[in-house]
Image (cartoon, rainbow, N blue to C red):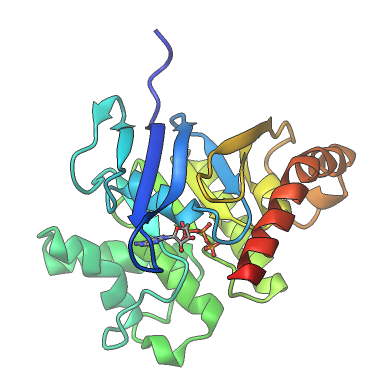
Length: 269
Ligand SMILES: Nc1ncnc2c1ncn2[C@@H]1O[C@H](COP(=O)(O)OP(=O)(O)OP(=O)(O)O)[C@@H](O)[C@H]1O
């Protein structure tokens, strides 16, 4: 028997009612993606191809039209409680301090406040925000807010981490710092990660494996690459590695045409 996967999406299709009245739009068609325990997998693909849709399926927030989702071998029903989900946009509650944002998940799960606060302080320190516990989201920079979101996702110690372009809104320096921090935390705990990005450099620098999705409609993986670069990695330095450059060229060769197709579709609107 093949080794058990942390997350298996098998032959997933997602059909939505069309936005232009009547009819339907097949966003994802027959997509199969597996993430092993401890593996860092990135999914790259053109804008609007269906990356977030697939992640929502893995999170149990969207039931696929057909196909099967398994979490550590068990068919997924409802929300994936073994997964932590870090969204693309701003997901902090503006009326709560950094500390109270980080404890939110634990509170909702019924953990006592004192214990939750203790864990949250520790996590805020780990993401470089020791001393900022009492700040409100509007009193923090974009990078700091992302750090709070990271602590919020990781405090529940999920076995699977789902990340949807978590750093796309950040400036390049802050982004690279955060990518390195995520890698450091991941190296210490080796959770299964499914990371969505449209940035190929980021995908290669972070991952064990990069999956390329076709342009929509009916997106599905069209290429898969093992990233055999040494770890630990510094995301800025690894870009100068000759193997990185080779991998980038090979993956871009597959991705380029899809990006052009995606761009054309967006233009036609
Ligand atoms: N609930 C929905 N109803 C109708 N269409 C939808 C729905 N959700 C997604 N879609 C469509 O499915 C396609 C895939 O969307 P999705 O957000 O998954 O793409 P994406 O690759 O994550 O995009 P981006 O790179 O812009 O974040 C898009 O064409 C989108 O308009």
